[in-house]
Image 1 (spheres, rainbow, N blue to C red):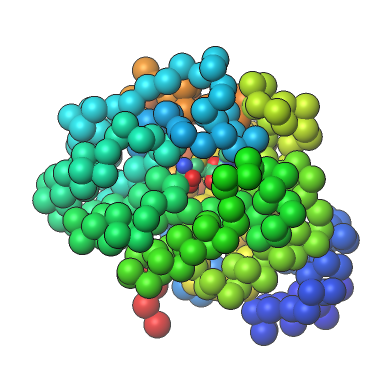
Image 2 (tube, rainbow, N blue to C red):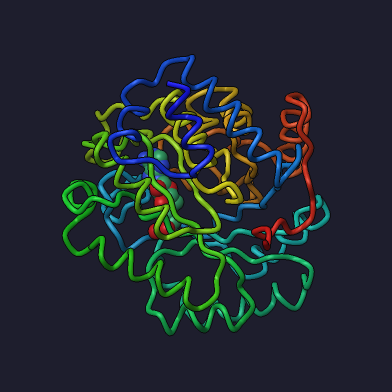
Length: 346
Ligand code: SAH
């Protein structure tokens, strides 16, 4: 066992069969070995620092119909909302006072929040908060739109590839959505100059060990600055409402593997991880993650951005979330860093 983990740490890569072996032999001992290595590797670049990002979930309208997602367009029971620009700027102001220097604007693919509105919003945040990073997570857009977002002052873009296997992609999405489009978007974003994040859900319906190995290989080749993974959690008003959730153990194992593969990547301990286990985010940091993304959205809309059931932190004001997370991070011997936290340059 320690031969493979040692090789992964040293070479930052493994043969397919070796990755497969790790995923099929996910014991507490293996996780302890991998997380010790992953923590050490993260520490070499980030010390005991954890970056924070203020997440603003500004619209849950979505034209897509992803089978796993609670805000898919055919979920008629979703209570739809869209924040106005002044409401979003208020979230930024509150976040800035709480020490956030990265704002993440995430939403469904909302056709009524136009590109022009988005550009104006980005310009206003850019001019109001010169020392902050702007991260977008708005799904697939034409290259020219990504270019305009970048020129307006956005710095980073999160777009999970969801799964790198064609057949699996089709089991999770309607046929209008294509893996090759998703990959082309990621390529465009990189070429334009965004710091790019990708990732996948752990334990998504029909996922196999081979699919996960393909995800790891895809991520290694893309070499993104950020990697977001979290457990799949079913949502009651989706076709996959009966599917099993991904596990804490598998997510932690994969966080450690990804940290060892991409030592300098920005890897969040996600809200989904905190949802399947009360200590999920802390365990994520201890497995090699180095980012947390508390919510800055107004409490009035929090519970409506429901990608999955039982999402945590839907009742707390931003300030409460900030205090709670600081305590959690300090409780495991880490420290929240309040600067922008860009991808470290060599
Ligand atoms: N519209 C944007 C943002 C999507 S929501 C985009 O297309 O990128 C952000 C992420 O939440 C998705 O990429 C997906 O991986 C995750 N997600 C969606 N439904 C989920 C579920 N049921 N359980 C866990 N994660 C989910």
